[in-house]
Length: 445
Image (cartoon, rainbow, N blue to C red; front, side, top):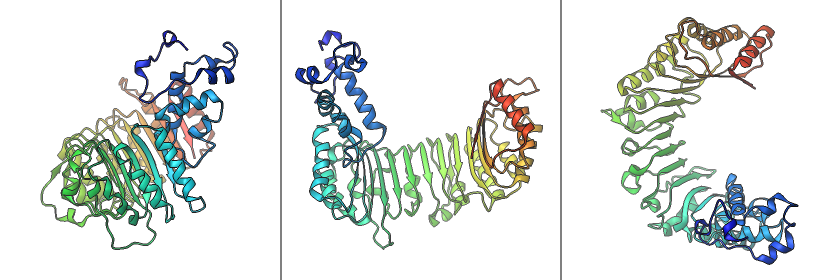
């Protein structure tokens, strides 16, 4: 197609390595103009569509009926466009299987790497104790200068292969390292191979890692996820001055003896995975920019009073303006403690609670119905519980928050109810009426 007909993309905007499909492929396989809409799409636009498809989900390089491998089987033109578009091949998954021939697996991976030309690579590598793992890792390591967003899910013993990547990670942006070792051993690999990664900002660790402050660029991170077992030392965690999002499981006993309060100035979002040493951790930090807090299962199951109090102290100490609070789950505990916490979060707009105590949930909903000064800016609420005996209080709370009588124009915008189904017909009709008036009401099991 002549260059003058390209409206969206011109030749100067094409990716490096893109080649226009041959004229004979177009003439032999594509229907005449007017018979098929897709035949009128410029090849450069078709290439962008293929890139979006290949990146929508990482496909295994071994899979021939999905991803780029599927596209190249449609017709000669598509095959030419796919093979001539390096970015189509730059995102993939590698799964080392026991039942596949080693040469064929390595060949499939090399095909992706060859056709991706010099494009940055985003991939996941998953294996157990497959004998092909070393061969595949060696191939990936040889292209480490192109790694951008990578995930490794494999036994700790295989991480020794990473030695050659030292000082070859100039493009690395996101890194996830997970251990699939079945039996725990004393071996704790460190992160020295990743010490020089000037663009690294996101790190996810799972299981047993030896974390040393000087062996990794912690100060660069904007996202850090410690899913357990790493024993993140306070001096490592508190050195992440640029951190914006944290997923953390407090297990380090060292936090218990931390004498001073440490400031995480840029932290906006935090998710706590366990209540173990939670109080000591929250007492040792200040988060002036925090806007979203998520407390996962086990955080409030046993010490609701204590945890809500330490959260209040954290918010007051940090002078933070919390916008989103998610609590999962409350097995029991007086709702009055939550109400005290809510009074410290006057700008909260989104609240999510999984509460299995029907009596306390009713108490909470009645309080939110009667006192509009509590959570006055609340726009979104999600309740997961047994609503059989609490549905009247829940519906009344929604009614009062959806139709405020105080003249305040701020009101609920979205409600999500989940858990057990609602059988009370008047309540269902009321919720349906709210929905017809514009309130976003959703049900799910």
